[in-house]
Image 1 (cartoon, protein in one colour):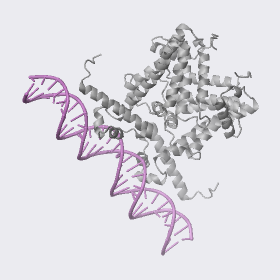
Image 2 (image 1 turned 30 degrees about the vertical axis):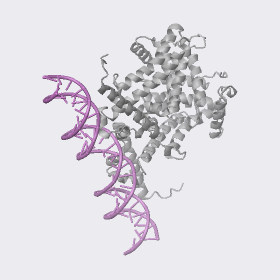
Image 3 (image 1 turned 180 degrees about the vertical axis):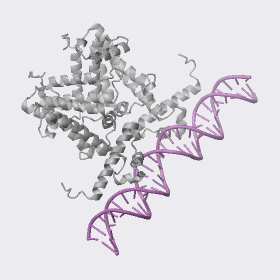
Image 4 (image 1 turned 120 degrees about the vertical axis):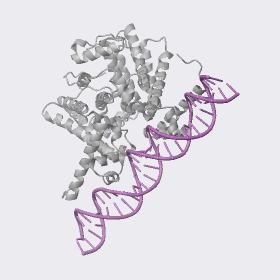
Length: 241
Length: 241
DNA sequence: TAAATTTACTTAGAGCCATTAAGGAAACAT
DNA sequence: ATGTTTCCTTAATGGCTCTAAGTAAATTTA
């Protein structure tokens, strides 16, 4: 870390950055995605227009930074729920983190929707972008917990030999990309859980289920029960089909 | 139907509307969501700017109409797959329709993504909007097939008495809203399947799974196997937990 | 401490967009 | 043949992104 003296200038700059983020968020929450424009944000913080380019190279970068902030806040909420029961078994902390995830999403629907709905622009796909790194920390939380569970109370896994070769290869590559934290077969279970959990929240927040459900809390709890079963959190350790 | 004489004028208008849709779609596919502007579309069809307001009241309405077209095309693809095996059992037609759904999504990622990503603007939530009606026809396909399956080969359903009251009430309301096509307990099974299917496609198209999977076809087939099990398409008719 | 540089802004402006207004010319109905 | 409807035009307003050019203050350097 090179942060020796947070000089007066840097502190001011940091404060302005926070003000910018707060203004962008306020606009998002109060007036929707389209209202988060460079001009509108600048107006909110009391500077006019192009001044904002001294903080972000353009609209995309501003959006990416704000999104990264949301990811960090969401991750922090999940970490806090996880650490509140630091000595509980991994399975319990997984469920706590999942519930914290939905709680944050429900409490901050505009922000959570923004995370999805904002089409990930090409520059944000670079693995070193601010957005990408914040998203990864978020994704890592459940991955780490699942890996801990795998080490302490291994859950049943499917037979990768029965899978199509393409899938087996993808799982192997993914397992390698997470430094073998989970072997391919266990990674498959983790990804299945992730897809169901994240997919459900995605649909809830994007209002794709309004036609049937107004309150998805019981559906989410059902989903968690399925996950608990897949991860053998109920103690039964039968092998999976 | 009041369409007596499709007068010369009306035919021209219809042709222009199709040209507009094609231009909007081309812009979407080739340059992304943001490129579908009134001005750009008008330029593509050779008229300039405000002329397009004779066809659509504004940008939102144009977007809604184009989206409705996508829904119709998707629904048609699913209906075609369903009717290609008109005499097969309902379960088989369900799987065929689901595969057609993903096939269309994979073949037309920009269009399928547009269906989700475009935040449903308030006017489009009115149950009589063009978009809403097209979306409903799409959603109805699997609902109808599931209802047919329910009548001919009823699948196991959960006990609604074991659910939270809120969920039971929502399911009852939904069951009523579909004219009792499925009773609440069966509606629960249908919705669970819908959530898993649609959620998976949603995540795939929004690139939320790129970090692990590049080809989701095997994952989708896994999902279908789960659905087949939930709908007892494999013949086993055990009651559900 | 004085000069040079960096930083944080400003206004001006080009080029895009959505949308409204006003008007003209062709097609259609009577 | 006349009046109306339809389809399109240009003009104009005001918002947006972003670049350019310039100013004043803070900071660094000599």
